[in-house]
Image (cartoon, rainbow, N blue to C red; front, side):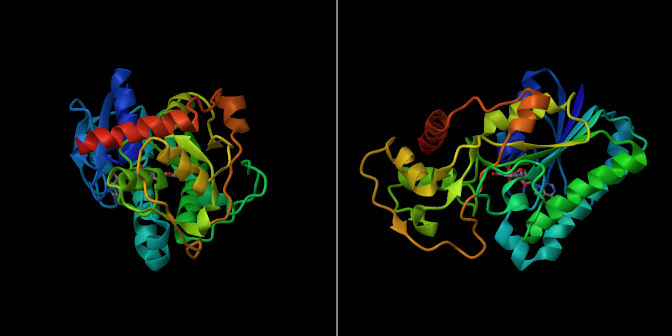
Amino acid sequence: MNMLITGGAGFIGSHAAEEFINKGYDVTVIDNLCSGKKENLPSSVNFIEADITDYNFSSLFQKKQFDYIIHFAAQIDVRKSVENPIFDAHINIEGLLNILQSTVNSSIKKFVFISSAGVMYGNTDEPADELTPPAPVSPYGVSKLSGEHYLASYHHNHNLNYTILRLANVYGPRQDPLGEAGVVAIFANQMINRKQSILFGFGELIRDYVYVKDVINAVVKCLDKGNGEIFNISTSEPTTVKELFEKMRSNFTDIPDPLFLPARPGELDRSIVNYHKAKNILGWAPLVDLNQGLTSTIEYFKNLKK
Ligand SMILES: NC(=O)c1ccc[n+]([C@@H]2O[C@H](COP(=O)([O-])OP(=O)(O)OC[C@H]3O[C@@H](n4cnc5c(N)ncnc54)[C@H](O)[C@@H]3O)[C@@H](O)[C@H]2O)c1
């Protein structure tokens, strides 16, 4: 089976590349390495350093028949999208279209689009399911929702089989500890270096943290199920940033108390997502609980420092 993974040198994409190499797939990764790293990839991956916005996918598809495409490559920074929505749309909409247009007349079995739950549903009192009307306010959320609509359009016009996974807050090894998102990686790095962490929203912001290996299990399960469907991939477990910080701190000694500051503009108070549709149709549920996932992630970052 031939698989193309865009953004496969990044945090989540590299776990997908590893999983499908281990399953015996022939895996090709396209990544411009703007945040991804080549060393995240197993050596047996066919790596193409290229930008999804101008790469000639048609000529690649003429050389090789892909069975599956998993699309992770994206501009992922919400604040950057507010500052420069044109750049965000260039990568997240035009980049996607550049690939989709090349799939026309190809016989790929499934296109998996990696979308985002938090930006789609906004603040949620109850865990939001897929019937909750999307209400993105950031350009990043708008570009992800546009991507979802484009997939439905390519299905309608060109019979493309696709599945959309709306991910909650993903954490795990290889997440960028210096990025704007990814609070687990940021705290891990700060704790290892005994630096004070800042808890925005006075530590009361609530999130739904899902471990990266569970996300990859969902990608595996949707290859042959859930055509034309959208699935939330989450744990439905609410955790405040303060609780997260304390769980992580218990893996260390002498961690300074955090600084509590107000939430930054645009930050959600509460983002919790219901994954029951994925359970019913894909037979997927998260297997890694937060304590377990945090321990593995902290171990990874500690080993990096050695
Ligand atoms: N991390 C999360 O919590 C989370 C939550 C919801 C959705 N997502 C989605 O998951 C996907 C992967 O996110 P991640 O957290 O692994 O981020 P990441 O930055 O580690 O991965 C993105 C990868 O895409 C590559 N890339 C970016 N622009 C590119 C371009 N123009 N051409 C080619 N490659 C390009 C980067 O170099 C990187 O390797 C994204 O689509 C993101 O929107 C992530």
